[in-house]
Each structure stands twice: as structure tokens, then as C-alpha cells.
Length: 130
Image (cartoon, rainbow, N blue to C red; front, side, top):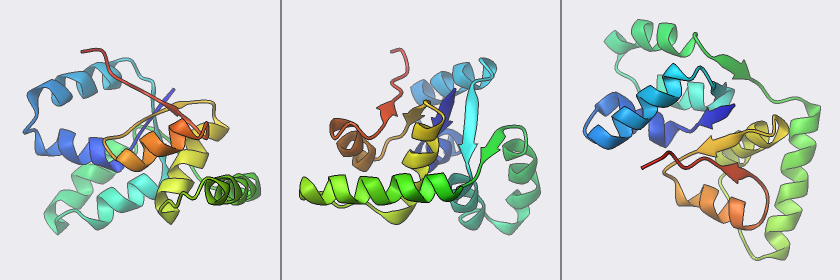
């Protein structure tokens, strides 16, 4: 299972990076894509009104993961670990990362905050084949 972050979705939907588009299509074809609820919210909240129905249909094809009490506890634990390492992360990034980690899934993102989270051992990252 691969959780795809907003940054990758946006780059894919814009279609400007042919390599990323090809990599994303391969991941989509593998049927391994999972969607964190905050990613869905971020994509839809940034979309033009006329694109909303199409995006809702597209995103509706993937397993959607929502926070539970366990997710919030994991985020709290990560906040403590991050503070001990003098690190700070955005709330949505923590939530997206925690949802992926709970499923023991890799996270594909272009956001460097997730690289820092991975270095702290909080989550596993997905790197598409070149």
C-alpha cells in the first residue's frame, strides 16, 4: 500500500512532469494507492469548482483512511519525539504520516518534511523507480 501525498497528486494532475506522471500511472495501475483523509481535503479545497465532481470521482476510487483515537495518540507520540530532536512538523503532515504509518504503508511525497520524519524513524517513504 502506498499513501500518495497532496504534493504528488498536484504534480500529477498538473501534468507538467512527464516522469512523475508516468510513475504515478504505474502506481495507480498497481492498485496500491491509499488516500489519507487530509490529502482528500487538501486536494478538493484547492480545486476549481468545475473540477470538483471529476476529482471526487477520481479520489473516491481509493481506500480512504481517517484518524482514530489511535492515530491521535501516535501524533502525540511523534510530537514528543520531534521535540526531543528539535524538529517541528505541520499538523496535516503529521496526520497524513501517522495514517500511513498505522497501515505500515510507504508515503510518497515531494514535501521535505516527510524526509525529516523518515530520518526520525516515524514513517517509511516510497521512492518510485527511476
